[in-house]
Image (cartoon, rainbow, N blue to C red; front, side, top):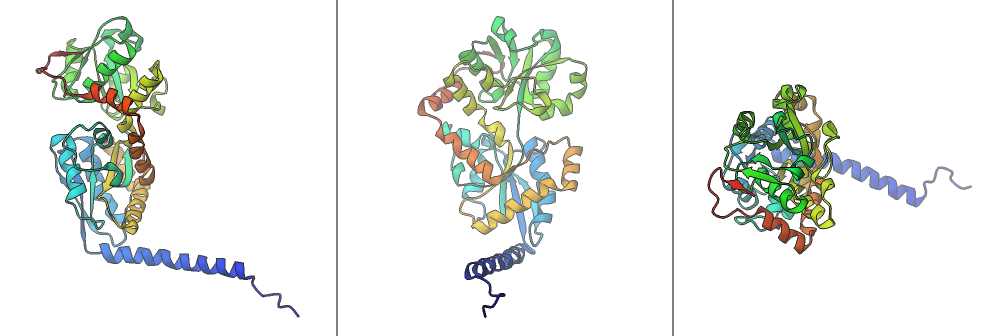
Length: 356
């Protein structure tokens, strides 16, 4: 008589695999806990204190250790200089490759490498991308007295845009729009930052500027409510849900080449404020750090502190970030050359001189 309790070989094998996998998962967590327990990890921040890179990096340092097995102490260290290159180069070449070092790097690290902007001693495709805190959706807006309700105004008459450094988006993007869209922006560059440009707007020296949407809605909420700011265009590929009525720069492009150039120039917006680890990190450590990051950004205490600091939380997985960074290098040589020409530092331009 056949034994009706006999388990088919295929099912038995599958059950054995599940049991083995279940045993391996806590074992892996235990290995990570044994490694991290009593250790100190660090987050290298590629910019100085006060900006959003710094704020997100220090916020992570206060929370991510709670979600790493073994709960290591996590400290933040600022390493500014060379437009964020000092910190990125350090994370890539010097920092420990064992899971105890991470970094917050420039959102345009991949773009800079693709355009060969100089000083780069890393390959972003080899970083271990851990996760994104938030995208960085930049918006060009004007002061209400400029009378510019849409970008159409810049096609009809001159608008003066306040800018900072010669390779910043505040200078590069109006120049790109002039060449690819036919707008008539005149950029007055050399301001120290957005606060100075805001004062210049109110004094009538310039008509508008570019700032991250998170800063605009957090720091200029009253001006938005009073309709003193007109939002003209978003420097990103997809409309932010808060301002779904404002077009993106890619939408406004009239040719496929222009769309491709703008997609490349704004590619850093999707990468935003993100956490990476050095290359050649053991796969298990990458998985541990990604898991800790994913848990952290869902945590109520983390989100409460972010909200108190008016920091957006718009997370993205490390795996998806790695795909986005790699995709930047698929642009055609023609598109890269065009974008490089638009981002090159203007020659013989002194502070606060009009720029095209």
